[in-house]
Amino acid sequence: MSKPPRRALVTGASGALGSAIARRLAADGFALVLHASSRPEAVQALAAEIAAAGGRAETCVFDVADADAARAACEALLLAGPVQVIVNNAGVHDDAVFPGMRAAQWHRVIDVSLHGFFHVTQPLLLPMLRTRWGRIVNVSSVAARTGNRGQTNYGAAKGALEAATRSLALEVASRGVTVNAVAPGIIASPMADAVFDAQTIARLVPLGRAGRAEEVADLVGFLAGDAAAYITGQVLPINGGMTP
Image (tube, rainbow, N blue to C red):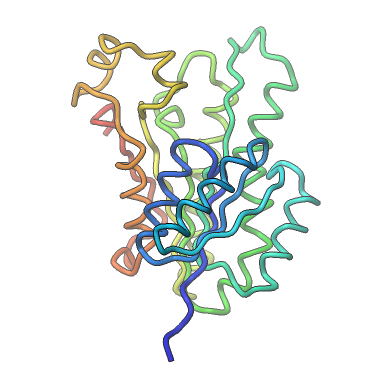
């Protein structure tokens, strides 16, 4: 009798990057849990797409910044068994130069990108550890390394997420669980296209182009699989050569 597929949760699966990651993990045979907050219809459509292609997917809707809502959602997910892959992709931008940044802008970005990692990962971790196999992949950003004007809040959140990645990796390594982060640079999307024109991208990116969401998804898929069992505590840039 074959084993049931491992379950994988992708937060922020309604966006371009999250949906690409979900499609890659579904193609790799994981049973997907697709999370959204403000766009539930997007993950419902994605779940239907994955099912039509022969995969398995379910959806969950909650705000990762809401500790009580996140815990309740995670406890409900665990009723069907452990989640063995967590991709912490949910994040928001709310840019402003620091002297003009409102407290609400600071807190919302930190709450989603950093506190959301805690609110989702912490309730799911012990059941994962009991299986003695797991993968946690956190989505950081080039902004955590290079900085970016108007994104002090975002850079702070992603920098802290990278530090958390390294520390958590040490705690769980003996149980067969790896913890890594990917740090994308300029990835083609409607939001990036509105900010970066071709000339700017050519100046900033040694490879001369924006990355594709599917390229980031391929890296996440590798880290989520058995082939990456000896990689943990690492932050892997995927930015066309923007940083070392």
